[in-house]
Length: 264
Image (cartoon, rainbow, N blue to C red; front, side, top):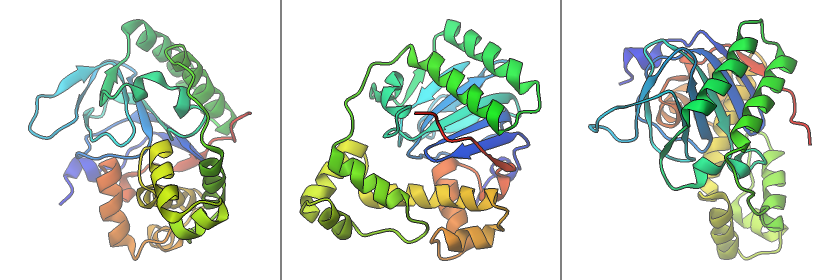
């Protein structure tokens, strides 16, 4: 049963693009959850509480980087935050150093938090449109990038498989079909994919389905329509999965807007 806070609609602004998302506004409490994205959380006015296991002491943070697929639970109590979500195999995620440390939650230095608050607060005070939100996202990632080291590019066969699967909508190729397409055995493909991406192909497809739901909501679809379009059996299946991955139910997601494609 979802808690009242996990059902409460978040009133901020939520921008999404392929592989990345940005939320700015009041944040409420979530249940324990894990998602594939690296998450950066910055308290804009003060600190928030976070823990990575149930029944363990809460810790206070002004800013934190949470690694991909790391369980965590947020208690912000309606305080304003900035949340950035970055897929780890993307260009941004592959140079985000703290998320590769093996530590579930890496505390951001106070000097960096102050810098991020200034950059975010200045723009958040205005009526953010897609272009300004995209510039803000890039600015924050650039500041975070000062902490990072360069990571080797993806194996070209995995990169090709990702391009193929990301171009699909709702109906995704099996691991056997993708393995054939990139010239690998099924076993070798699954092993290579998990090693490069950090998760199984099956779990990665679940992440894509959840992103597809957000994309459908951005297009104005209802939750039921979005669930079916993304390949979920029904809205109840979507709600269970969404809460497990994000700690809130889909109806709590604020109005979705689109980030502009990242410049390359």
